[in-house]
Length: 386
Ligand code: GLA
Image 1 (tube, helix red, strand yellow):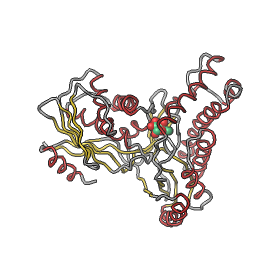
Image 2 (cartoon, rainbow, N blue to C red):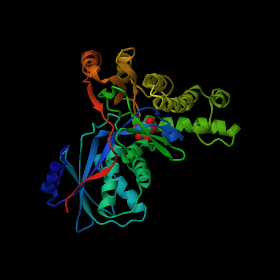
Image 3 (cartoon, rainbow, N blue to C red):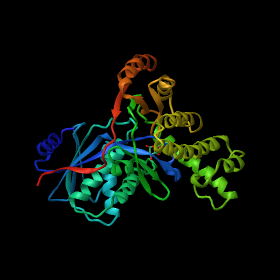
Image 4 (cartoon, rainbow, N blue to C red):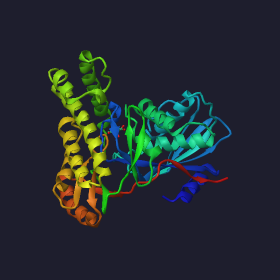
């Protein structure tokens, strides 16, 4: 996106100079629905981002403007009730977190822009929250660390968007590093950068164009089902606190006799943590083929055990399975729509997309879009005018 244009839009709308922060969307290579179960994830920040332009005001008003929708929203710092417009809530949520941390803010103007497709499972909302949080932190010279910001943005999503998400999306947006995925241990919050060298292959995102609207209620249900499984094991083995502490044998013994669905959910998560650990070894051994196979297995688990896929996602994964140019594919993110992530030979991407697109559009009666994602740096200031 053109940063100067964003600064111009800000000046035209609010009449002043601004500071601009860019915060990226994310992909997740493997490790899905593991973050809120104290497991591992392997996300990376991408070349699509949310932008927040900001400047102080002389009063206590918060004036928001979403450039893409040409919509405005105005409130005061002492009245942060949620808006029917949806997008302001992500900003109000982070203001609320900052105030709850004991910081007294004064009013500001804030413009939102960006190029992350909404509802595609690329974490446009987390990117927006992180951009706003980082921008406010910069503007007022606050002292939040990136990890504090990730946790605050997560809490904002819980409180103001009603999704009990894990930490992955915010963490990836803030901590992203060019050419690297990040292996995050969601229990200890320790992380390590993992170089991603796909040897002539690229990350291709195929967007079903199914907006994952069902996802917030179903997402929260999955979380509850996992907690139920943990509780059943804990009744027998009190030292267990999360699915991270639980083995497949424990599930067979203590959860399977109780409920089949809860067992399936838990089994998927336990297996996914094992797959992620193995996939990291595959990457370290330059074995992208083996890693790709694990992505297909992840998809199967998300479809059959965790049940967060949908017909369109399954169709896209089936289409590329066995294709000589594709090493791995799976649905990505919360599920029920959004994108699949595919590891595809760079020289074959155009051909692959050209062959799938007409079949998808005919069968599913909706457009297919695609992005070749490159892995970029995380949240940062990209423009300062004074
Ligand atoms: C959404 C959530 C994340 C994570 C993924 C599934 O993107 O926001 O916290 O749980 O789903 O892995």
